[in-house]
Length: 493
Ligand SMILES: Nc1ncnc2c1ncn2[C@@H]1O[C@H](COP(=O)(O)OP(=O)(O)O)[C@@H](O)[C@H]1O
Ligand SMILES: [Mg+2]
Image (cartoon, rainbow, N blue to C red; front, side, top):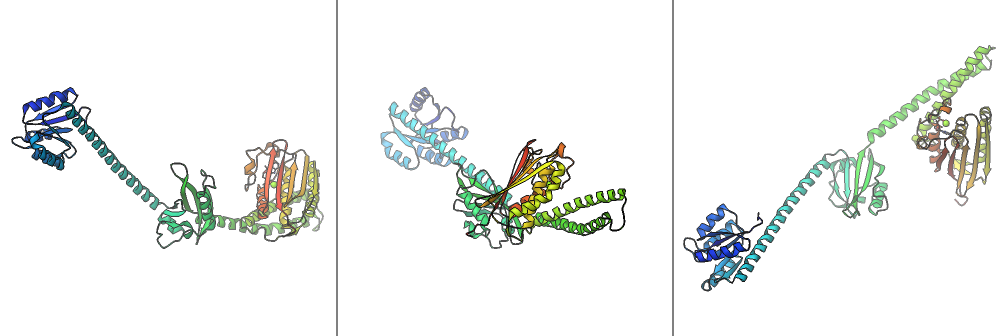
């Protein structure tokens, strides 16, 4: 590596020339080394690195030409300037062909001499910098290829499938797990259009949307896809370039088949247990009722009390079991199979009539309004279930009485159902959770309310099965409003 001061080696058999060079160059800040002939010059270079050589041609022991040849081999980066008299100009030109950098003629013109040296110095610096860059470049390429090979190994060992597409939505990278999970047996020749590999249309559409920048770039999109006998979760994200533009997509595939199977087994199990529990409970309930009605003989007050309490507990259990069976059906997508045009007004009237006594008992003023009613395509039992759950919640969670207003009205293509109460309300933090299975809010004023936490999960399931939506607004201590939109049957359909 070249230091701050440039070292010039002057090889000449004439002492005058050596001394002259020494004086001029030292004055200009160069460090000067001298040698009397080629041999001496080479020996010196073996001990010390020099930056520029000034080389006379005619010298005893080893001539300039010979030394030039040797330095070209040994130190190809060091520029050699030939010192020549008029008589040896041809030889100097010859030397240039053999790799000398330049030549200067004796007697020297100081100005010219210094310019030549300076040029050689600059040239040497540039050559060295170029060499440095090249080395750095090679190192970077090596690091890059090392990184690439590491990444390859990681991706190839992963249990999750990985697929990367370019701007044209062609697959440019995939791993063995990807092939296995999608049950692709033939090797893919990259790059291949993604639609030729992925048969799931929803996933292809997602990737198209990500590539076109339609979907948010810092959000991953998760979807479930079926591939042969596997159920997979596909998580897709945009690949961003240095300028933050979308340069492709990355999809990770996760095998969730075992979880799906477990979930199904759990549902089947709950379903089976619920069914098995229901028949004996129904028969116990019947016999209990028979006893309670005095059909098996007169009862004393105590008997009546115990039987009555037992019956209430059995009803609770039956309610839980029915809820569990409903949830299982909703999850299996079999809940709302029977749909007919129904008159919601009738359903609401029936439900209110059924709820009225409970409301009165709790000191709740229950009212309903209907407006602009239109028929909806629905399962009457499910719709009744919606009203039952929402109205009984409104009553249950209004301790100390209050007002419950049910409004049903036609709004264009939708029927809007609102159930408003003036009860305890729901804290904003709890709102997103109340539709979860078994979730119940702990509230000191409603601790005595008995429930399973399944009602709203069923309501949401039923509404969504009818292509409707459900929303809730609530202010703690003021009240709660549930709002449902159900599509009506359009007359031109
Ligand atoms: N109208 C309402 N006012 C206040 N809280 C309510 C209301 N409806 C539901 N909730 C809250 O949401 C929870 C879940 O309701 P739900 O699924 O019907 O279960 P359950 O009534 O069996 O507890 C309830 O436990 C209650 O805390
Ligand atoms: Mg409830």
